[in-house]
Length: 288
Image 1 (cartoon, rainbow, N blue to C red):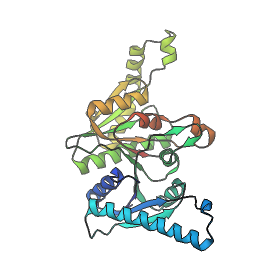
Image 2 (cartoon, rainbow, N blue to C red; image 1 turned 90 degrees about the vertical axis):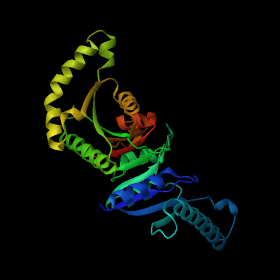
Image 3 (cartoon, rainbow, N blue to C red; image 1 turned 60 degrees about the vertical axis):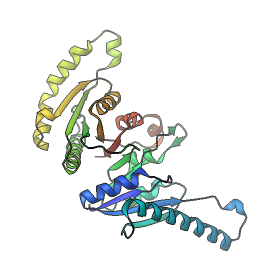
Image 4 (cartoon, helix red, strand yellow; image 1 turned 180 degrees about the vertical axis):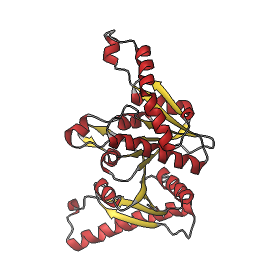
């Protein structure tokens, strides 16, 4: 996978473009930038020729805006491939494109979802085959850490393999950016059982940590990381990920996500999606 797909935003200073170009240079990847344009032209009451002319004008405007943006970020004379696509819903194009061997899809994060609307971000998290790097507006700072999150309680082979992939990707980014890496494992204590006084939260977490130690040791061995880089914390998974990322001043959080579709996808977000709603940093998500 020697390519990086950057989704150019509409804003003048698109964080995804600058972050993507920075990573592409460090990782020696070819870059493709895709931008989208769309307007409902049926209301203009034009003939086919007139509609085609307006459409082309809008596409040209979008291409010129992206070219100007790239000139500012990459400098004049860059050789970045640019595609401008006429589409109202952009995620189907991105998802289809990402099947052809991209190291990652880079896009500025958009935090908006409701029962009747699913944003492009959520579609990509659930359906995009390539890793998805959702970029915040915050700039990366020297000395900031990278944090990976894994599920030590996973029993399915696919999810166990995903733990390895998450750590491997996080380690690659940490080495490339020359920053520290930590791996967070959250012990989720059943709140209902605590509320009913059926278990003691501290005792439960202590026992689970003891039970999960063999899984941690095996994962550390598989990934080549010392166990000292693994942290076990108890608490609600998503909120603990967010609080630890803030505590460590992480510039990138790497996690696995399991895609859902249909009504269930709109009603129930997985842990990565819940954390993403609260995180203020970049997030790289991988699927099994």
